[in-house]
Structure formats: structure tokens, C-alpha cells
Length: 568
Image (cartoon, rainbow, N blue to C red; front, side):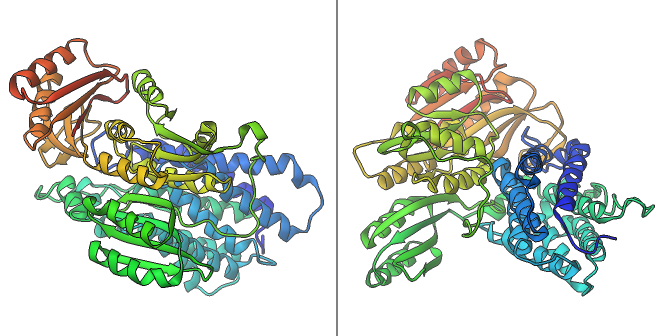
């Protein structure tokens, strides 16, 4: 019986967790409450754990062969696993799991021996790290599952390592089954939370790693399968209706660090209080302040300008306040495993005055467009490591990141914090679509301060409404009515507004829906499988129906989305 956790058990846990996630990857991908082709939580978790496994393998084949005390080997393995997960994290799900692992590593790596009590404390630390990593915590998600695991582990008050792990896994399984009761959008879709399901598999893998080989019982399968709950008989409000209500009026979260004298902070607080709510300004005692406020889109610039008036703002982040948006918590001080990073050579070091941009995009046409604008392009659904490499490739001292997808935003934030360790100023403009990134890049001006440029880009992106035409991946209930797998969907700002069977018809109706709300400039980006005649058809429609609208069209070549639309 394994009485204390050791490095070998951590290796077994990571390997078993990765194997379980691969086995259930498709199942978790299918736990998607929306019909659009972006349900890849299972894939993102597999890629995140693959990176963690690779980081552990580097230790196993290298320095781990040197003689070290067992507690140091354990701490090293835990930190490498968490670090590898962070650098390989993809999507919100990957980032939040990396933060859970980081919380456990922070707690357990300093313990002399990890028994049941230490595991319970580590799970509590993991839960705290997870909640701290989310801008607006929402119950019924992976947060509820990790909180329940921590509570279950602590409830039995045991120092038996395996008993505590089993209690945590069982409590997590029960919490997963409750997620549809906590989050109406899950109940409407008839699914449990995808990220929570992935975490349950990881906790099952921990139980298996701690179970003696001759125990005779297979501990895997403690958690429920991805139980589908029956949707209510009456359709009532759609998933998108509920999401829209959750997000209505939330505006943007503006955060930055501020170097300023204490005397200037009082006026800063008063200025920000007039602009928005959820105001927090806290100091570290050395003249640096952490500033946080929620404001409407039109007040983003004013919120940052208030910081400029008080001192020097840096690490500026502007985030749409969408329910459940994940943001990684601040990096902790202490020993850090580099995971293969190196001190850059002189020719690789950033040039302080140079500015750069990193854009997430897919498709040869879109890539060429962004590169023409001087941006470095990374493919869709990047890892933290890939974004950090792209930042370094710009060789710029000031870099703006344009994620072009809500699920990539958390990865961009994590990459920004990693890159800042090498002396690069990085800001994230929360674009949700490539057309918003085009609008943001169009207003760049190297002649003004970097912080002012970030504000202008954020405002330009926020002023650009975005639309998409894609094929429904599953049956669902939407704002526009029920859709079936294979239907064509027209989305405006992420919400389904048009459902049909003909691409030209859906595209025309989407344009009319968007231009009916006003607009002077419309940008169309045609996807890889869009027919050649689509551009001509839509040009003729806009010329005839909306004669005062300026139209620009590009062959983007992007997968998944037949058409992207931007209206400014």
C-alpha cells in the first residue's frame, strides 16, 4: 500500500490521466451546448495533458537519474507536470486544468511527505487557484467539480492517501451529475459540463495510480459516464437565450498594473467609480497597484486614461465579461521549472521600441492578409507555448495579441504573462473574430504610446459587429428556433439568427440582419469551401439593397466557417 505520494506515482497519474482523456476525447467533445463547430474540450484537454506528460518525460530521461531526496523529486515532478500543462494549455478548459495542477503543485511540493491530509489540502489549494483564475465564476462548471472534490477529500479527515483520493473522485462524480441543475444551458442541451467530466477522469486516474497492482479491483470508472440528462418537455427559452441573459449588460473588464504614488490613487478610484462598477484597486506596498474595473465599451479608453493620469499603467488587459470566461491567475513566485526554455541570444532579444502583433487565424488568405499588416500568425487553437514562441518571433518590445476566439482568450492571457518574464510588454485585445482583428490592426499607430494604441485597437474591435455562416454540427434549440445537424446557421456576435439550407440565401439574410442595425463598412471573408459565385452574389445584393455601404471582400480560405462578416 502506497502511504505517501512519490514522483513515480505522479508519472503514473499523468500517464493514466492522458490515456483516459484520449479514450473519452470524442465523448467530451460532444458535450457541447452549441451547434457551431467549436466543441473541442476533449481535444484541448488531451493536448494539455500531452504537454504535461512530455515535460515529465524530459525529467524521467534526464536529470531525474541524479540522486536527490524523495521529497525534492516529488516537488520537481509536480512542478514540471503543472508547468508543462500551462505551456501546452489550449482553450479555456486547458488553462483552467493547468491552474488546478498548479494549485496542487504549490501545496504538495513544499510538504515533507504527502499523505491523505496533504492531498486534501492540495485539492483545496487547487480549488482556490481555479476560482481565482476565472473572471466571473459560474457554478455548474469545472469549478463546482473541483470544489466538491476538495470538500469530499477534507470531509473524511483521514491520512490514508488512497482513501482521500477515492473520496475526492466520488465527490467530483456526484458534483458532475449536478451540473445540469446548476447551469440551465446544460439542462437545455441535455449534457453535463465537459470540463468537469475531464477533471473526473483525471481524479479517477489519480486513484488508479495510487492503487496497488495486486488490489484486484479496477478503480477506474468511479465517475459517472457523460450522463445525458433529458431536456425538459417544453422548449421554453433556448440555450442562446439563457446565455444572452447571463451576458447582458456585463460590458468589459479592464485590468492593469499601475506604478503610481499613493497620493494619486484616491483620485483614480473616484474617476473609475464614475465609469463603472466592481472596482478594486489594491497596492503591493512598493508603489505598484493592481487595478480592476467593469465598464461599458465606450468607457474602455477612459478607464485606462485614468491610470495614465495617475501614473504608468502596464500589463493592460481588456476582456469581454462573458459568463464563464476563464483567465489564468497571476504567476506565483518561487522555484519555476523552465520546461526547456532558454536565455535568448542577443539576436533573439526583443527590441524595446519595436512593436509587434500576434494574430490567431486559419486559412491561407487570412494568413496573407494579417502578414501584410505586419502581424505574426499562429494557427487556430494554439497552445500557450505556441503563442509565446510567436511573441518572441516578433522580436518586439511591445506586442499586442489578437486571439479571435473566446476560447483562445485565456491562452493569450497566459502567454502574455509568460512573455512578460523576458521583458516584453504584452497586451491582449479581446477579438472574437478575424474581422475584428482586421478592424483593430487598421487603426494601429506607432506614433502614439503603446497603451493608447491598445485602447484604440480595443475600441475599434468592439465597434465591429461580427457575423459567421457555418454548418450545424448537432441538433439544438437556438434563438432563431430549432436546428438540425447539417443546417446552415447565420450567427451575429456569436448568436444564431438565421437557419436555412441554401448558403447564398442564409448569407443574404445574415447581411440584411446585420446592416439593418446600421453600418458604413462591411467586410466579407470567404471560407475554403465557399463557391466562387458567392462573392458576386453578395456584392450584387449589397449594391442593390444597401447602396450607401462600402464593401470589401477577401478570399480567406478559413475552414469551418463558409463566410465571415464584419460591419463597422
